[in-house]
Length: 426
Image (cartoon, rainbow, N blue to C red):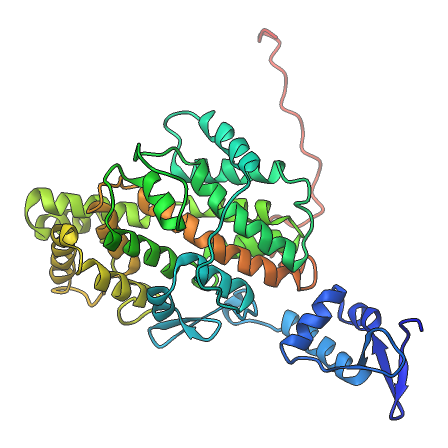
């Protein structure tokens, strides 16, 4: 029997195709709505596919249209998401306390939870050898002064070029891409630790690209936890760029590249590097007082302090500081960070944020100041993929605000060409 609409209890029922057309989504998205409890389905007698109540589908379509066009306060863009909630100085991944999740599970496990809502203990991300080779060749061709985000962006583009199926935007395909792209980004970075082996947890492989110091298990756990803590944080600027790209149906490699482009801005990904240099300065001068004074005298904000989403302490910083306290090597940098917080507390109520905690980790582990930016970018790639997955389920090109023209009103005369100076040589 063909998949046609049916009559049930006197009411018209829609096929999957009809429901998808009415909602303006792909057929697989209709079943995603069912799994989320937003639609109910029924398999009629003698039919091969599921059927849907027409009134229920129409109500969901109206709700989606209303949500996507609802006015927002202060002309700010509002985007529906089921990934991260920030509330009362805590943050949650799919309803689960994110800091507790990061302390108990590896970065790969937290990423899987973010993408699928399923915890997969012991999962490890690996990359195809051909993809890694292509990314390494491209990264190795960059100038020596290239920064970490330059390398990661080139690696992402190269990995995409090596994947002929990159335009498959189905959920399974995108998640499969994520599981190989993240380890490819790590493997494409030049190693610093000469005795490293590209195996085991992602944190171990990343450490070899950031420090020449052999790590102990406590240090690796701290890095792995930092990655898991940073995996997503609502709609940061880079995440919004990813969603805009995904709204235009850019493939996941291109969407991640868009996020990396925004991350490189000095107001986003570079914050931990500034805090790292500040801590080294405090350690060199023996006190935070002159260092903080220099920052304030120059009219700069003290790095690593305050967060507009947390009136209290950043929960990511709390979790990471707790681990760093168990690492003897982190003692001096941790004391320097506390000195900075105590010094600034005389004049302001700003608390430590995750950038300061990340700076303690990098400064005490033989890593360069740019290491925090690398950790942030690798970690956040998983969150970017989660947001891309959500956006692929939305109406295409919805992330298209209207411009408010404030220029000269038409009609205006055609501009006149400047007079030609006959004395000039051509």
